[in-house]
Length: 402
Ligand SMILES: Cc1cc2nc3c(=O)[nH]c(=O)nc-3n(C[C@H](O)[C@H](O)[C@H](O)COP(=O)(O)OP(=O)(O)OC[C@H]3O[C@@H](n4cnc5c(N)ncnc54)[C@H](O)[C@@H]3O)c2cc1C
Image (cartoon, rainbow, N blue to C red):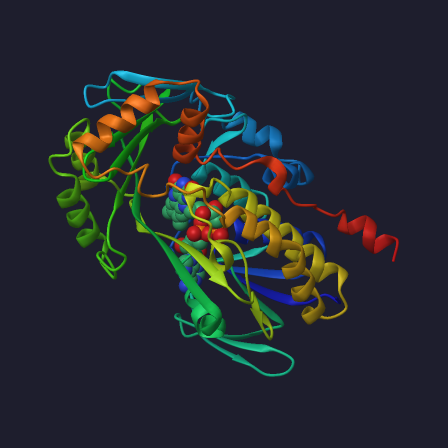
């Protein structure tokens, strides 16, 4: 495609990766982010498989390595913090892998590698889209109006731009869980190991060390789909505290952390299933298009691979329709493979009774047996095999040989 002016909405992982490649291919790129600044919350993510391959092509692997979270591995612990099983870094059953980085550090790295060439606008968002045959007229909350050749939403699972452009084609598959991520002060009990604790009434707590002397906490629990819809941040905090009060282990300390934290992220655990990822000149990518949920363990792979392929196809094609079609054709099977979750989620992994937790703890303690490895795979998302990988063409070479 000839040089075009493209608006990307959402500056997390998919947006800046897409901006990087579109800029490299000669497009004019503007990124709008609703938040007043980059949102740097969240836990560790591992950059592996296709995400690592894209990072390699961007020359940022060593930078990612230098930002390692220093996590030694994961331990499953009981209510008295006694270790039931441990999986050191690099173990195929461990959540901790070679390139382990805080989500926020990856967002910052991607932003730093694009901010000089791409125009970022923080604290604004799209409120209207009107497509003519040739352009998209975009209205922003700030009152600004502007024309773009293409608009791509990388706004995550709750994308509003997706709603404006293609919502009728989108369905959510709720997995029965809500999850919260937050940063809390480190205490003497927090070492270099991540700790996973199953509490009764379907709650899983996780505490993980970071490279800034703080602790990253997550709370995941069974809940009805609409139980916590449309809450503001203070209401979310209140609801979370209510849900985990009396849950034992380190819940009192996590409750204190919820009261003070500045970076709470709280949402339903739902997959996004969209029958099409574009409508006219508007497309969606990343969690906005195909959220697989953190349980799948593939969010970063999908985000970075999808951004790379979408940018490459736009570079290669003569028209955006061709590019959007090829992007879907290349990504769809991979997305579907990543969205397939093993049976046992959420029921087995989030037991609701003390008895259920005791059975689960017994199983987890018996490390080594085949069924237990399968079970740990359910906990850590590591039960997916590498067969679900995706080809990342060298678009520069392809274009040169055309
Ligand atoms: C604060 C935060 C913490 C997270 N923590 C974890 C974690 O610990 N573990 C994990 O596995 N996954 C986490 N995720 C999700 C993870 O980032 C994604 O699953 C994955 O990386 C794909 O990213 P994405 O860029 O497609 O979407 P997201 O990471 O969801 O990012 C979407 C971006 O779009 C912005 N946005 C939303 N609506 C609009 C709008 N209308 N206009 C403009 N911008 C908008 C958001 O502020 C955000 O910056 C977190 C996401 C966020 C936002």
